[in-house]
Image (cartoon, rainbow, N blue to C red; front, top):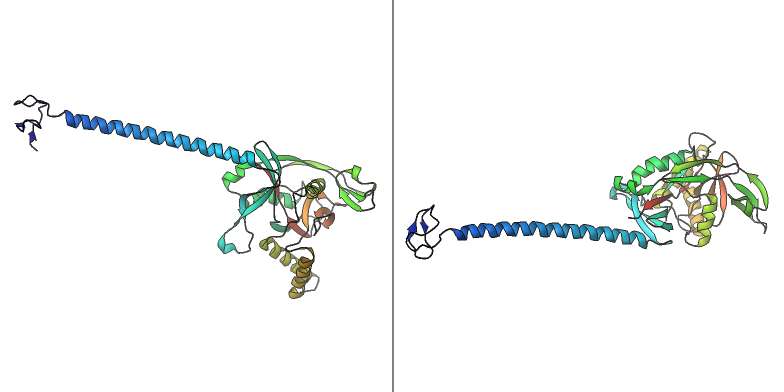
Length: 309
C-alpha cells in the first residue's frame, strides 16, 4: 500500500521516516498511537486489579461485620436438609437459633426438629459416646446437611457427658438434671460417662433447662419430613403389636397437636436416663425432662458451633 506525506501529499518510500520533499516526519503518528494503546491497556489492567482488591477486602469486611453482629436469640440460615417432605423440590435451608456468641464463633441449635430416630439401634444399652445417634449426626447428617465449605466452618468440641439425677426438688416437683444440687430427694442416679469430641451433638439435661428457661428457645415443631417419619415409626410399632389402624393413629396424633401445638414431639437430649437402656428427652410442651427407651424414637434437634466469618 502506497505511503504519502501527510503535510505535502508527496508519495514517499514505505520505509522512509522523513518526507524527501518537505522534510516532515511521516511515521511518528503510528508509533505514537501504538504507545497510547499500550499505556491504556496497562492502566486498564491496574484499574481492574485495584477494583478486584477493593471488592475482596469489602466482602471480607462485610463477612466479619455480619459475624460480629450475630446476637443470642436471633435466627440464621446455615446448611440445608429435607423438611417439606417433597424431595422433588430439593432440600430446604436450615434455620438455627443462636444460643451463644463468642468472638467469631456461635453456638447454634436448629429451630425445628429435623428428623426422627431412635437413640441407639445396635443394642438396648448405650451411652452418648457409643450411641448410633451420635454416629449418625457426626457423619451422615454432616454430609447430608452441609457442603464441603460449610463443613469446614463447623467447629469440633470436647463435651462433657454428665450422669443424671432424678427425683424431687424442694417444692415436691419431679425433676431430672445433671446437677445433684438441684435435687433434694434423689430417687435415681446414673454415673458420668466419657467426654466426647463432636462437631454435631445434642443438648444435655442441664443445658436444655438453661436455654428453655431463658425464653430464647421455644417448643420446636417437627418438620413435615420428620413428622412423617414419626408417624411411619409409630405405625410400624403398632403393626408389630397387632394394631394396624393407620387412620386412628393419625387421628390420635392430630389430637395431640390440638393439645400441644402443631408438630409436637419429644426430642432427644444426650444425657442418659435412669437406667442403661434409657436417655433423657424434652416433653411435648418443652416444659420438663422425661425419660425414653433407647430403642424408641424421638425427634432430633442438632446443636453445633460454627465460625461466623
